Image 1: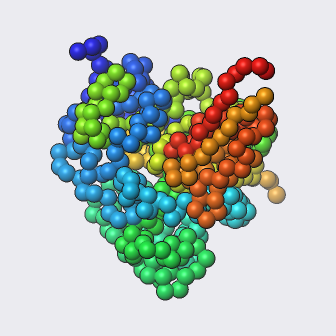
Image 2 (image 1 turned 180 degrees about the vertical axis):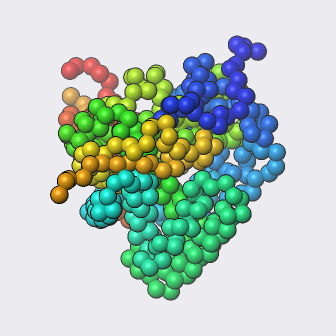
Image 3 (image 1 turned 180 degrees about the horizontal axis):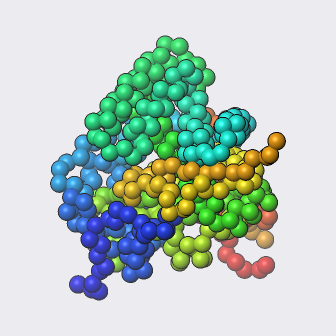
Length: 399
Length: 73
C-alpha cells in the first residue's frame, strides 16, 4: 500500500452558507488532497470521487468507464437499464444509435439560425416582465419560459399544448419531493410525447421530431429521445439563466463590465458555465481494473466525477474561484467531455448569449428584491443546481 | 517552412461542434450528419492557434494535429 488516500464519507448535501456559487467545501477540500479520493456512495457501496480537472477529463474520454445505468454500483439494489432513447445512460453502440441521427440537427450553424427567434422570445418575455412591473420572479418570467418555448418549437410541440405541457415538465424537473406527484407528471409527459410522436409520424411538420420519424427509430425510442431533449434542454438552461443572473448581480463590477461592452457576452457565457457548473457531477463505472491517479479502480466500481471542482481546479484555471467574464479560457467541463459531451451545447450558448445581455440592457437598475441569503437554492442532491426563485426588482420611469 | 497538418476521423466524431465553434475557418460540420468537415488541412499561420485549440478541445479525439519538427524558423 502507498500513501493513505483521502476519503470522503459521502457526497455532501449542502453548500456552505453564504456561498451559493461555490462547490461544497468537502469537495474542494478533497481536491486539495489530490485529484482522486475514496468515496462511500449513498447506498454504502465503496467508490471513488474524482475532483481534479485532468483526471475528470481523462475518465470522460476513457471507454473503460461506462455510462450504463444498470452498472452504476451506488445503491443497494440493481438499477434498470435506461429505457429506449435515453442515450445519456448508455454506451456504444446503443448510445450512437440515438445520438447520431440528432447530431446534424444541433450543429453550430443550425443553432445560430435560431438566434433571431430566441431574440423575439426573449423580447416578449422582457416586455411582459416590464409591463407587469417590479418585483418579478426571474425564474418564472424569464429563465424558464425562454428555453421552454425554444425547445418546444424545436421539437414541434403545438402552440396550444405548450402551457399545460410546460407545467407537466416543471412538475418533474423542478426538484419536487412528492414521489407520487413526480411519477404522475413523468407519466403524463411520456403519454403526451407518445401522442405527439404518433401525430408527427402521421402528419410531419417542420421540426426535429418530425424529421426523426423518417428513420428506423421506433415510437418507443422516439418518445425516449424527445424526453431526453426536453429535460436536458429545459432545466439546465433555465438554471444557467437564473443562477447566472444571480451571480452577475452578486458581482456588480462584472455585471457593469458586461453591460458596458456587450462584445464580452461570449466570454461571459463561457465563464458563467465554468464558474457555476450547474450540471455538477456525473458517474461512470469501471468495466475493468483501471489505474487512475495512482489508485486502482476495480472493475464494477462507480466513480463520481465532480465537474464543478474540476472547473475550479487552480492547476487548470488561474484564480478559479473568481468570476471573471474577461477570462480567455476554453475547455471547461460544464458540458462534459468524451462521447457524451452535451448534444445541445450550441443551443444553450445561443440562448444564454442572447438572453443574459438582453435582460441587463433592458433593466439597468436590476437588483435582488430580497437579501442574497434569502434566495431559495436547490439542494445539492438535485441533478441540476440552481435557484428555486429569484425575486428581482428595478426602478420604473416616473410618468 | 512546413505547416502543421490536420487530420479528422469522422467515425470518431460525435458532432459536439467545438471545432466549428473554435476555428470556423478550419472546420465545419456536415449539414446532414453534423460530423466534422475539414476545410483546411494545412491552415495558414494566422489560424494555427485556433486549429490547435480546436484539436485540444475535441471531446472525442477526432482531430489529430501533426506538428512539424521545430527546426528553422
